[in-house]
Length: 504
Image (cartoon, rainbow, N blue to C red; front, side, top):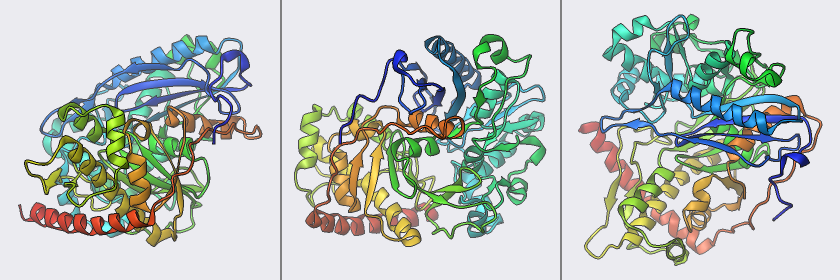
């Protein structure tokens, strides 16, 4: 359902404002939001790219990102002139890692979740510890995207460097340290790294021992309500006097921000389709309650003292569609959309869509994409559809386990740039998941969610503006049955892939 124009000019903004910042896979972005949660025009953006290599490297210079964030705040402070900015909030891609010396200077690049050079350490950890017990404690299984394996890999491959590191922190913590002179690990950031005891909301000493680090090398943990302030000697104090008294939120995981931006409805399933993808449920989970019982394929990330996100992630969504557009020389969007609105066919290639490895539900980080039922008659359009159906199959597996844990799920809200950029994907997703889908019509939903989290702290009494949505997509029962059969075929191929991975 469409509502009034969501973005507004600064003159129409209702105080107080929130300055929201997002460090993603392709750019750092920023925007101001008013007290109702409406974004002010224009937004700000600084593009960047990870350094990637065939060996699994995926890194970025953390000081480069500090400069990007500094530039964004400069632009947005000017835009906010005449208004009170009550909070500054920052989210970053999850499971980032930077090692610093005692003065807070970076000694390492920033490793991101997609750097899988530590895949061998995942198997070492599985041999040393009870992975089910680790998942029960932290909400995370062992995987190359989490920090225990990455820290063990660094110790094994560069012990001299590790010996020099005084502190380990996420990229968001590093940015705040350089700009504020103080930092903290946001609860959701700590949880996403796989080092947090989800029952207590504190660092998990057993996992720190496995990772080979001490609690003294980590930041304090802070909920969004626990604000930071710039020190008098900090860059922020010198550069942005209007923000000195603002509530600077501890860094937030981008998955939590995206969930709040797309859904903002407690207990509703939210699907995010960006560079990677995820299905998440925000659930009540007070500290000390004992934690949720999780199936093996899901994670549970604590986001504050009262709530957790449960769900699963798919490594390659936007990354896969961008690869196809580049390499398959695909036709115009309307032709692609027409292809996906045609009835599905058994001749469509079966695809294991693990271009950079699998996260949920099998956690096979070394998995790679495979194509099946391809011959000389297979067209680029059929390959496109096969990859998208493979991505939907990955989401099917997550939904199955969410239902096992939480009961039936009848509908979901969906957002993220790929929801709009991949023609026809939502139609296949609704039928493949047997869910009524409502697409949220807003750009940069992660920034919106980030702002909403901060507004809950600084302006909780002010009603939020409604985001426009498309009409609901209703699954076709006949096509649901087709994709159920398709899921069984892909499950069988997956079992063969896992068996060959373990024997190879």
